[in-house]
Length: 580
Image 1 (cartoon, rainbow, N blue to C red):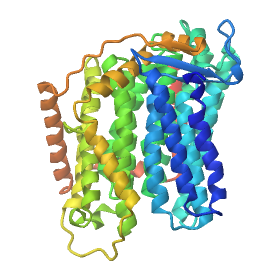
Image 2 (image 1 turned 90 degrees about the horizontal axis):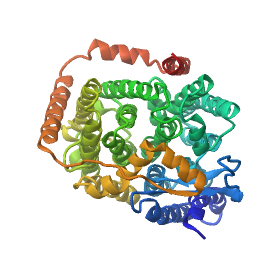
Image 3 (image 1 turned 90 degrees about the vertical axis):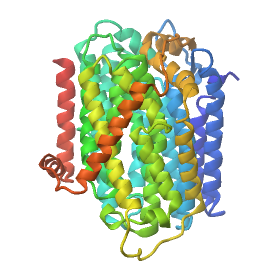
Image 4 (image 1 turned 180 degrees about the vertical axis):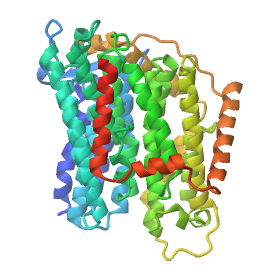
């Protein structure tokens, strides 16, 4: 058996475990946890075996065609999984982080009913399987299928605790918004097939190379809008903050740390690997605009939140924008930095949501204005939240510093975009600093009415994720050069990706990636960003809410009709920019 033939197994194993989970609770209530851990460990181990080939040399592309239906003279009929350095990076993140979050989720809720525990384990593993498959798939309709599996799982997880009306409302909003996105993705994929007779990414790239027809551009607008909805990019973001409010911290971590990245991975593949940056349309300008708008809106709304989990959800909207801006730079530094930030975001956002979930679970308090004094009562959670906040802030020594440094270097040829990205970063620092102070470090006059004990699985997850954020912050030359650099190369050389997919394997071209950790100029800029962010946080604690932020809050009414209108407007903008 070749290494490429292993590619379906990391998806099949968690699906099989998901099917077993509701059944084995009748034997023993802890079996779903044990089987789920074993399944995710198996998927992770298989992906690591594949990684030894994919990251070797300058990088490799490995392809497996189901039912041995290989391409004939560049024409593809079969479904394929292809592992390249970019997709495999996200697949590894989904398997590794998913394993940790599964442990946290099922250990925290191990005392619920047997039937409910089996359902929770089933939905979680279906979501993780869909994320891994989305990273490995090599054709548009198969990507749509896994998009749907992830969407269905997220509906169930959001509305899982049916006794809470807010959970049903949030699930309904996800259903409406994600269905709009799914419809756009399906129509876009169908239009590409009708015009070009191809579903496979490699064949599509070869067909679209050069002059792109107007139907193909309309299809691209639909696909970008659909996947932007899944990733919570403004103005397709309406569902995301509401989805995090009713669910446990571990599910929020699954959503914000992993699920929303599915849309980013899909948009980047389409923009850089299928259509290509030189195919004569405004796709890079479009996703740059969406990214900047999302980064600024999410940061401003995060600064204004009193609910801790909503604050973190709005920060996810902002971070998705940062990722889009990095990838849209189409430079080695920017794309490598965005790939690295994709991993870092999964780690520190999962850490922050687990910390927030632990506090809400223990105290029953969700509002920052009602918190305080937790540094003394919950030192491990406080340390974990602080590490996550410092990572997002880009403090040197933590993992966010290097990835943000690379993204900013990739924007040097776009000074206006760089300035806006830096402004978003300052506001992000302020929002997280304000949350850390109000929730953990300020004194609380009265004791909490109740304070539940913290589960061992939660403590293990917090310590592991915090350690990972620090470990990847040590001058990360290995990650940058052995993982992010080949990922950037395969994204910026779509012909090499297409060749590898159609031929069954292929080499990734070498690419130069100048990277020096902790350059004086970068350190000074980071210090200024953090200082301005802390000053803004201190000022925001003492002033009335500014009118522009009040206006933004009023625009977000909570009405699903309004959010659907936002999404329709976003689709119109995508079509206008690309076609006009």
